[in-house]
Length: 81
Image (cartoon, rainbow, N blue to C red; front, side, top):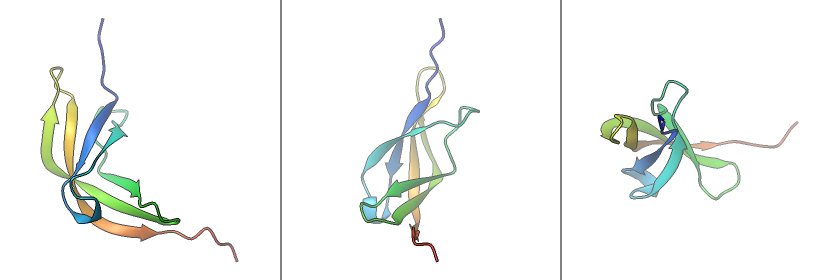
């Protein structure tokens, strides 16, 4: 019986959420996503983080924890004209 990991720990290494961790889903190919968007708690604002080279692996060789650095704050508007 084979167990596949479908999620991994995102380690936020700098920026407004420095030191926090969240869980994210691996891609269909089994790799970490290039970026993650983290809601800020403020409506219409997310923090975007980009993957770095820091990675930890589980016993099966799948990524279990990956470092991400702050890239930008993204503001979205739900208003329509």
